[in-house]
Amino acid sequence: MKSDSNRLAKNIFDNVALAIKARGTTEICLAIREMLASAFEFDNYLVIAYRGEENPVILHRSGASKRVHAELDSHYVPSLYVLDPFYAAHINRIESGVYLLRDLAPDKFNTTSYYREYYKKTTLLDELSFFGYSLDGWTYNVCVGRDETSGRPFTKPSVTKAMELAPVVVSILESRWEKMPFERAASNKDIPNLVASLIKELADKHDIRITNRQAQVALLLLRGHSSRSIGMQMDISWQTVRVFRKQLYSRCGISSQAELFSLLVPMVEIGQGSAQ
Image (cartoon, rainbow, N blue to C red; front, side):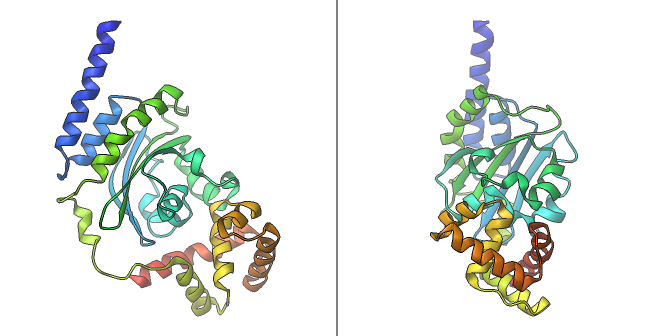
């Protein structure tokens, strides 16, 4: 038993060394995956890069289930990423490290249209994401998940292993990635402002006029925040949030979050596309 433990430890250290050696090369995503896989079990793996509010760039993906990443390119990257808790953490510049999705998700996340229409279809049961930031404005996420393949969430020992490896992963993510293909996207173009894009597209496409505050409330509602949570995010009372929500629904001619989702998500895709 002791020799098995020693071999496992050696394997982890070997893979840490290989991952460090792979910094700045196109092999880095695979090297990080092998390092993590030698420490704990997961069903799927994703490396994604965000910059400001523009569409994310997928650097690597793998997984046993065909459903987990099935709509990543068709739905998540064009628009739905703006409703994801990990994207919100990127926008808020959460501290570098590793986080469980359930610790970052808003209080009403599981009741959102985003959860029902997209996230639930991935079959994901649990996710861990490592956050690292580059000096040129990119946020790198290494996400590992449990889905229908294993049918169970991460164990406490797995989370502990992830936390132990977090400093290594973050250090690698925050190194200079000189040969990654995504750097073609890192141009000097203007980064779109999502709230401004929504306001403009609603006016141009539907002749609907909403205020900056109403647009902010709309996005937070779609991300799964309750009125009290939105109030804390915007530093206003929850009663004021309800007023903004009532005004928003009235101006848009809707009466539910599902209708808000159907109306605004296409606007996100149009707005981001036109900004590029």
